[in-house]
Image 1 (tube, chains in turn cyan, blue):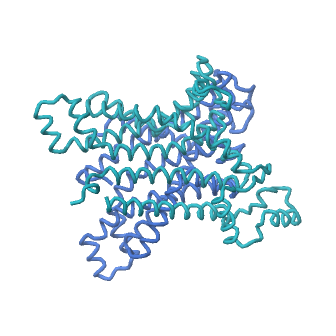
Image 2: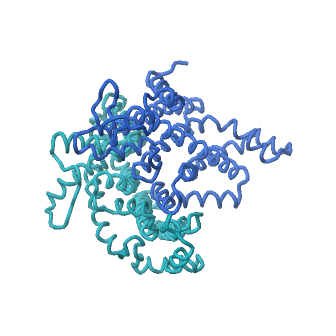
Image 3: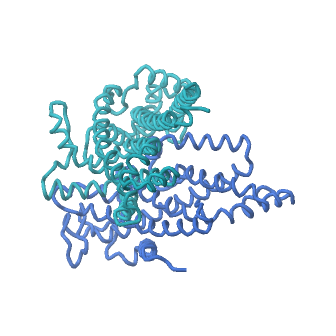
Length: 318
Length: 271
């Protein structure tokens, strides 16, 4: 296990370093660029005096490295600052919304992951026949369709014409789980479509890769049924790459959530971020950007850890 | 050489979209911002696709909007390609710590989701067409960088490059005369995919209200303008959304074919 542990520690340390650098990049991205925050906030109404006052108030006269350190210190102690546009505490606001976003992403994953693996297995079983071709076609379509196309088509038919689901996904605490799930059925459907095809395709590729091994040929020659070969022999060996793909797609889900939340006016992080980008509320954008990036990096890290832990060559060194 | 039907359809549609963009003012029956009737009129002989949220002819606006989408996406793709390929080749040819530094920086850029990065940057930059093209092009050049560096590293160790180095050719010669011609086919296959990405990315930004600003509009912005109609059963927003999907699928059909062809040429290894 020594080697595995060493690799894990290395990978986690690298992840933390990456996170630190990303926080720097997010900060630099909003501070060093030619746009001036104070100018952006005041817009047309800017006078030299009001500009100077606002700069003083925002602490923009401090040197940038100092501002970065104090911002980073705040982030580490859970203080994300206050929003420029309405003076609200960002940590509290994010606390209200982060749960909603994770709730949405979680249920999308619960539907998408088993479905993708099942369909991927089917594609392998019927490879180069119509179920496989259909899956290839769907993949092409799904990487070409913007989320808002799928989203509004679903709203148009299922919310407006058929009235099965609400067109606006409002959730609040007093709702029961079932009511909440009904409210977010359409956003979940859009998110599932966004990630499903890619996950299916990668599952298919991972299993096909294993199917070329000699022991699969043995299993086939011994007369096992195709499904048995896939489930008992190929699938267990393809688990690591599949988990990897699942994690990468969950990371993608976190980004897909931004657009989906705006389509369905869902009270989550994505909506919060987009609203404040147009208000040029830099502290909120920095905080949200950092959180999205952290989740993304975290999921990628988990993907790497899973592939290290499940790699039999590392677990049983010669 | 037989061209598969799907690629042929893709080519015809793509050419159609580009022709529409090029000749927009001559094709469009009405002006882009011209108010010609009531709000959200249904399809009629005068207005083939009806009218939009403030009574502009939807078909004309679609044609002009398509022009905006295609022009910005094309320019962003050109920027990401020239920059990404040039940096990638340079990193591969020079190697050493410069290569390490550039590659690690690209890794860092790619560890933040592109949309999130763009939103962070756009929160401080004034939104104009130039800024959009720059942001999209720069962010996407990281992917082109990775691909071109990988391709160039392979080419860089081949005999003819060694020979050129021993002849005493300069680095610019190596990059433009030795590596570029040999790296072209995998890069061309990638071109289509990057263009699709640019189209979808621009549409998403505009849909979020952070891309092309009114009164000008691209297809993503038109979805935003007309989205309120959906709940009243008015499908005006679906038209630009479907157009984005159609453009992306057409280019994809062509890119898919080019990708298969170039990977055949390279003995199935692919770019």
